[in-house]
Image (cartoon, rainbow, N blue to C red; front, top):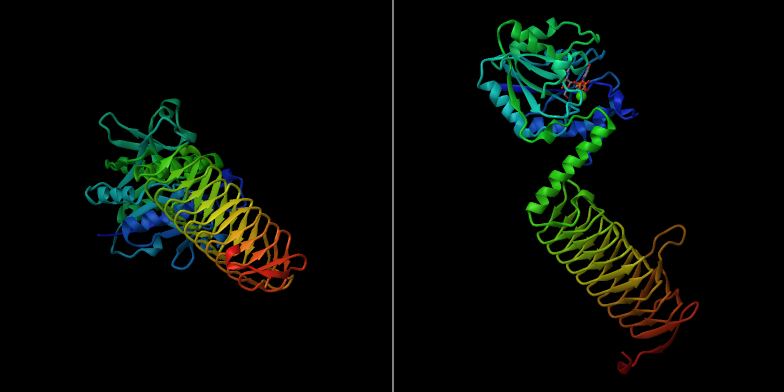
Amino acid sequence: MTCEAVILAAGLGTRMKSARPKVLHTLGGKPLLGWVIEAVTESLGRAPWIVVGPEADEVRAAVGEGGRFVVQEERLGTGHAVLQAAGEFGEGVERILVASADMPLISADTMRRLRETQENHDGPFTLLTVESETARGFGRVVRDTEGNILEIVEAAHASPDQLAIRELNVGAYCFDAEWLWAHLPELPLSPKGEYYLTDLVAAAAAEGRSAAAVSVEDPIEAIGINTRAHLAQAETALRARVNRRWMEAGVTMLDPETTYIGLEVEIGPDTEILPNTILEGRTQIGEGCVIGPNTVVHDSEIGDRCQIQASVLEGATLEAEVLIGPFAHLRPGAHLERGVHMGNFGEVKNSRLKRGVRMGHFSYIGDATIGEAVNIGAGTITCNYDGEQKHHTDIEAGAFIGSDTMLVAPVRIGRRARTGAGAVVTKDVPDHAVAVGVPARVIRKLKPEDE
Ligand code: UD1
Ligand code: CA
């Protein structure tokens, strides 16, 4: 019962007008070829053979270890491409699934149905079709009055009557292996000088046999990528599907059309996503948050009941009830504990802000540990880089950093210590001390009644 798969990826993709191979253009952040490899592998339980052109180093590198490749030296059409893989399969292989690398949205489930239909039918192959008003240059499926499939006519060679046919060839097939290898070498040369895989339909009909057809469940599966406009259409369709799933899972979206959610992102129920928001990479968002508008979150973890407005987060961790923005930038290694408030025009990198830290306005905190309930005054900056090395800043719990303080690292501000407005702190400030000036000096110790 073995079935093996061949993915066609040797085409030039000239209509993309790109220096990059078409199959490496991305959809939902993943290369087109990656989508097809995944669907095929999931449906068969084994990796496919991939037909590539002679100069496909980039494609090979993108697929990486475990990729199995066949080279099509000359691009003589889809039929010729499949034929290049003939030598890879032994006698035990009964069926061959063929898919195109430019049809990224065909699901594993559809591939499985294609294979199962062929398993349960004695015709030479099964093909995937779609009923669609937008024909987009697909081959037309021509049937006789009894519904038998007679041929597939490529749009370029179709008569006006044939062009009106709405049943289209999606470009995925499951063949009886023996029949395929016997008939592929006999394909006629098309008027375009190519060997069309689709001409196998007429070859079967000529023997009085008919191909079976399976149609896609969701029309978005039939979006093929030949141009950048198709790619944008596929992105839109994919986005709609992803967003619908999150709404079904309890996420509110004010405007799904401007909400971009990556495939690996996770979002808790009762979270609200506001317009122009991009959530990408390995981002996880808790319950009851409000994210956006105008926010980008990449590879970050966000706890429950956080609010993030008009900000950019990359590689950040936020515990519960953190308030961010507008206009904050969190960079890799920013860790904001529960209840931290970070207001406008702040940047935090590689730093831990412990519970209840408040940092309202115009600050840069890099390579620092900020203790519980510290207040960071407007304009505070950790001067963490001396031109050669990065240094650490420690601010202990309860400290109050005056507006416009420069903390020249390495430096430590003690527990409940204070700095005056405009202080340039070059030396450690002891616990409970007040330091002011440029460079800052300690002027007094706080008495318990001052604190
Ligand atoms: C093909 C089908 C068409 C179908 C459409 C659906 C043929 C002749 N036509 O048209 O009926 O409606 O797909 O998507 O098959 N490729 C190679 N080597 C080649 C030529 C192509 O590997 O020599 C690969 C391409 O990289 C691509 C796939 O085969 O992944 C399909 O080729 P493409 O040129 O895009 O065919 P379409 O014109 O879209
Ligand atoms: Ca195509």
